[in-house]
Length: 323
Image (cartoon, rainbow, N blue to C red; front, side, top):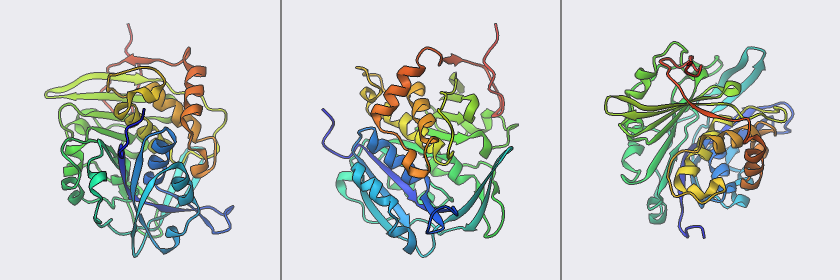
């Protein structure tokens, strides 16, 4: 039986992505919307603190979250982030239309503060280090790092911001980042040095899989390379990393979500990869899968997928160990 209280609280601002096919001219996105919808559809009791500007506040996509059971706390913003994404043969080109403002800390229900899981999923660096003091010391904290790694200026293409130390990163137990958001020559040691011993660093690389590094006092104690899960056709890559990270945290917070009796609270890469492969098959939040779909994809891919020990030193080097 699922626990009665809130299991995970997600924090971040919603963004509006410019899309000509929507009558509004935009579609609601942002890591907090994908992450909260993912954990709710996987069956976890979910709450979300979501920054919204006036237009985002009335977005129909928020009803998807409510229908899935997400308890929403909408925090008014004078300006929310807006992006224009263009897919090219060499990958996504992202431009900032509007950068948004920092996310204020609202009054948070006591029941939410008791949640065993928290997730910080910024889309434009809006979650400041002040939030680190809000998150309970004993909660499992996941952080979507890519939302802190963007240099934004209205009307200009988004560029990389170099990783730097922060209170939120140092507090995090699970940190996810895409290889697109960090220079591929970046030493992994430069990333995990910013995390505390015992934390897990996830580096995703889309169609080629990725890495999970368990950080110890003197460096990695474990490095695993996971292979990708095949999709049935990519429609929209938006939200893939946030869905992956949310599913990965779900496997820690409630191990039985992966479909078997499992008491070990350890990130299940296969389960998360299955969730990530499904979200890209639909437009926007419509692609976020439920637990049944993830388990079906997991069963289909069980034979061909693998998680392998590996030795790598850079973000862009994901080949498995030879010999």
